[in-house]
Length: 355
Image (cartoon, rainbow, N blue to C red; front, side, top):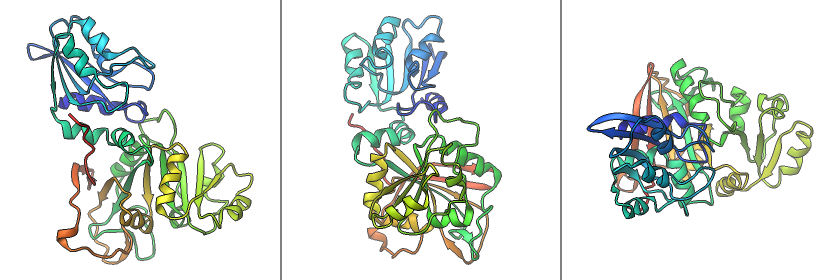
């Protein structure tokens, strides 16, 4: 199953809006085939694994998600498994999709032994945006990406943040961006850093993420990179309703789409209405703090650099404190080194489909 999860990650940025799925075929404890869902609209992981197996009869299939039981862009995976003569299927998670689910029951009805729940939490973390999208379709999956010093600052006292993190961490962020529908920042981040917010890494996303600038009522620079390149990469400015008309006039002819929302709850709902199922928020601290305060953050990607600034721009804004007994203990889903930096990935809670 660990190998199947590793295979599934290879579909990052290419398989969405479908889930990331990997599959491994075993015979007498030996791997005889493996595959993953590499591209939206193409073969699912189970079919890809069968295609790379000379003789799957009597084999065990280990798969990260319940095989689908419906015909969409591809035929049902359950049919392929049954026809191939696979005798046993071990899956991590049930499929919550209406219509696609029910694959486990179908396989059992055909006499195939089915076991569920192996590395269930790891599989849920891998596909968190997909799972939350079915459980909570009214808003996107919101993730924060934070690069900070050891003492929790995202910039020094003068506001400089280039570069707190090292090249390995910056390469990881480009990979990360490829898997999200939108990349969002606040106005001050654009003013200070003037980011391009595009994906320039090893993975070319099937659909480039929309760049989103969140500004309550402030001015938007026409010479900012995301404005100057808005005709090449979709760009949205999301502002308060009172400022919308003025910003539309200021940005007329740039290709930027201006939308209105008042308050963080409306902002998040507006992002979903604009077609974004997942959004990576990259800055700044005040925006991160407001989203956290409203309980609208589902995941944090925290890159901690081995620096001690002492004074600087707080990574999560100025927030009130909570007593220990009232605080939320997040679920750690990943922890590893990125060169000299450390990556910590935490989810507010895991979205686990009913077994």
